[in-house]
Image (cartoon, rainbow, N blue to C red; front, side, top):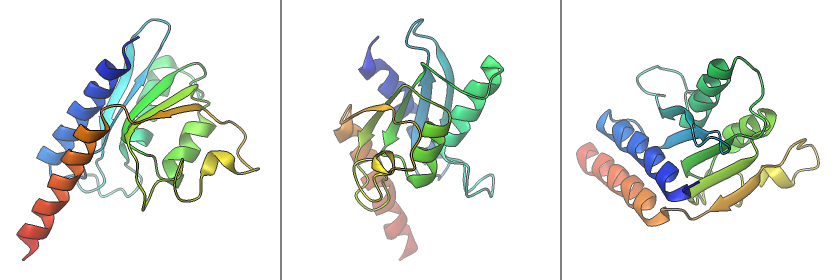
Length: 154
């Protein structure tokens, strides 16, 4: 299993989101035993007018639907940015085995930053977490996106 390959797929989703003027975050759910990508998604909060349409939520839903089950035990998720509290909780509730993410989110993250959801006593399932995979690329994409947003605002 090549972590860089799967994170690159998540980055492609994030780039597509940026093209659509969505916050460039992508997610990919993978069956690590077979290497199959079960689902891919990017943020769609603006175009869907749904504040819950984060990349992780959409990818998790699609993977569960594809497998016909309500949990994704033994599956992995690759995300280009540290998940927020909502997405960290969803990853826990879906029983994802491994969470891999690229860049830290000091302001909105909930894994190593912020509320540190998986360290809470009320968290019922904590995935194994690895961060920093293609971090520079993911960070650069986000920085460029928000710089352009600020530039176009003025």
